[in-house]
Length: 327
Image (cartoon, rainbow, N blue to C red):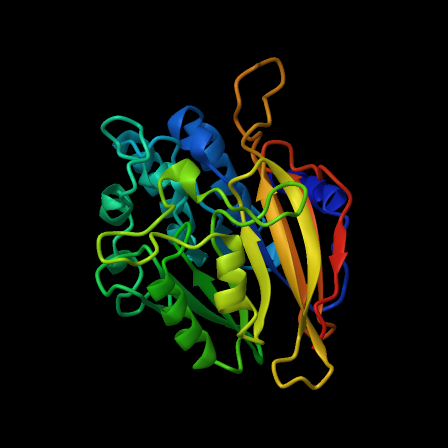
């Protein structure tokens, strides 16, 4: 059975080749899995473990909306799912989405970031402990809401900056400080709400109660343009922005002028991945169909390839997408 699976995977994952590369798995909104289809969530994680060596997987990045209504039973499913990766010593990161911060009592956005369950099931102690597979740091020392991860692949150094949905300005300032303090690391910026399927940056703070200012006069949150202007434009080592939230996929290259006005432009790739409205065959129920994305990185060539794969069938959904981030 194992031999058959590997043969099948090699056939379906035809984007593999002999050049040196590693992979990051993008895990889009799992809200329907944790609420209604936990077996698909487990299947995704087991697929990642089974394909770890084949794809040279170095990290798994969740894109937010871990749960659908911020209910404890769904967090228990998520907890069990990520323990599959932990048992295999596969590093991962998470961000929370709008559904993960709803008031769990009435399934409502009330302008408060209800991350109690997030921190109960994914406490900082789950990550920052001696001998852990994880390395990085936190915005709040006792909360997982905003944090960064460090990892190396051979001589290449990377940083994954995981930010809350609609990041507060104080969070963006902290992220800027961390990124600026790690100039040798290429940065993947992850936040749940950023692009729609047409490639437009989102401005929907009012839809989940994060518009306006709090009692101290500070913005409750920043929209996608705020994140872009306050953080992405400033930090030249940010190479990619990853998000979920809006059903569909989109990827675009953004050219940013060098702040020293040298005439040079750097490239940042903004990538949306979300399959929450995909329906299982023979069903009208939304699920996600076990789809995930493989981000295959060739560090020596500064090339990246994105492929959408089903953890249920092992088959590729769409044609691979080639990205060339540049030096």
